[in-house]
Image 1 (cartoon, rainbow, N blue to C red):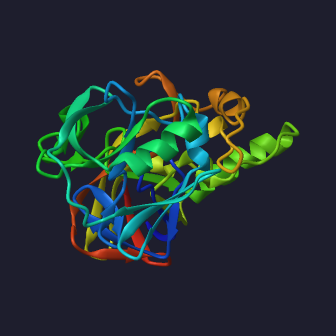
Image 2 (cartoon, rainbow, N blue to C red; image 1 turned 30 degrees about the vertical axis):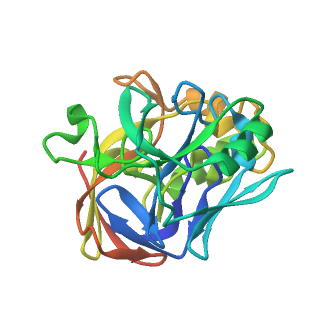
Amino acid sequence: MTARIASLHVYPVKGMRGVDLARADVDAEGLATHGVGDREWMVVDATGRFISQRSHRRLALVVPAIADGALVLRVPGHGDVRVPLDAKHAPARDVVVWRSTVRGFDEGDAAAAALSAFLGEPLRLVRFDPAMPRACNPEYAGDSGAHTRFADGYPVLVIGSASLDDLNARLADKGEDEVPMDRFRPNLVVEGLEAFDEDHLDTLAIGGVVLKAVKACIRCEVPTIDQRTAIAGSEPLVTLSAYRQHATLDGIAFGVNAIVAAGAARAIAIGDAAVAELAF
């Protein structure tokens, strides 16, 4: 089945606003741009444990960009904070993302001060240390050797645009507002599939890049958070709960997690043909 890439997105800092791309590089850990990978940074609390929009909704209001050799964070009320990409780092420290203890480089006091003041507690910004790869769960990734950075578990999240259309039609029937795709924080949006065909996706081939679907994405409360205001409601989870319960994984499924099976070091772009192999 031939589909098409509708949009591409990376999230340089876990939990912060995404960056929309016309073209993305692909590496073993997912999508990248300007040498910066998806979820290459994250914010940690005083214990070294990650924070995300699940606990800190206002992370959605921090806007990252890659410009002039730096990660630039636009922190409301605190201006732009520049973190040079070639900064010399102190030795890496242990940090925790879910059940994984990995290493991250602390990005200094300026970023820490702005984020701490904005979010109201002592926080630090850390960058992933590639010398300590973080393996994906072999229960789903098998013996592929797949690994990721600070993403929840897998390098790429794929969603079909028809799946969002289906959801929004159901919301409209209830008199509820439609929701944009950014509520679900995908990396790659595909058009040309039927609604929820991604549930059955085996592989997605885009030129020489091959993505292998490994696990349904079970949704937390983040899709209820407006990414422009950080205000949360009850939708779209209430509506999704009526028809998208995943019996095996015991949660609401929307989108599919994938690993990079082939084609690392290539690039993909909006409009590229994507050949979807479905396994029913």
